[in-house]
Image 1 (cartoon, helix red, strand yellow):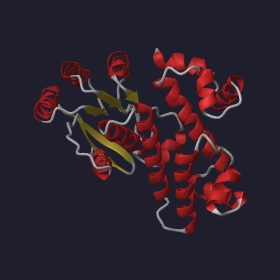
Image 2 (cartoon, rainbow, N blue to C red):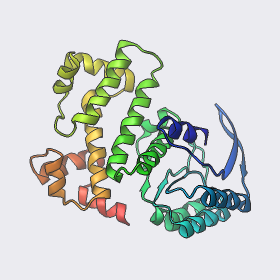
Image 3 (tube, rainbow, N blue to C red):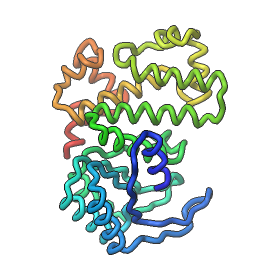
Image 4 (cartoon, rainbow, N blue to C red):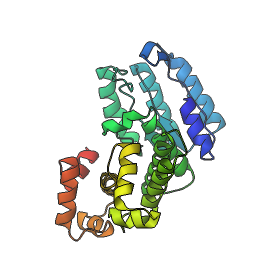
Length: 280
């Protein structure tokens, strides 16, 4: 919750919070839960909607059926313009936070109401605690500013990438260069997807840029570029009605087949299948 407030405040927004669960936790993991009674959660939500009437809502940890029912009822009655959901099913150490029965109800009843659901797919996302949480909070801020969903997601990715670069913990030449590389990706993809282009823009050799990226992120620059490309493709598949051919053209691929080959290599599925799965 504190991280949500910090992220939104740093991006110029004001957060109003309703707490659903309190935890006792250390670096060794979560020691104890206290699920806030559903009646108290309902009171918090009603106070916020009556007083502030937010147009964008972020949903996080929900552990009980009673609280889930209260949240869904509130969202259906007040109908905020956007609902962003960050599924918190596991802790950063792999501990189960949400019973399977509640998770099933979330998938059936809450997900259809959502504008955007943060996908926790890559294991690397757990390297920095709260990264997906920051992503969801940033998307909320940009949506509240009137930005379209694809642009909000893209800008939130840029924000999170900067957080990753800063997490190196110093102002060394390497961390600054890595941060500059990520910022260039945000403004020059998909027009440029080769490592040598960005190395030239940064006035370093491709091999040196590779050394910096591996030291800071554990990934070569080409992998980072491909992951950024994939994120943009996924956003268009899930938030637009563009055909696969149109997406291929917009992303700089020579053909639909070329895009499909790239997407299958990155995700083990085709763009069409990915789009169908997201709509289920």
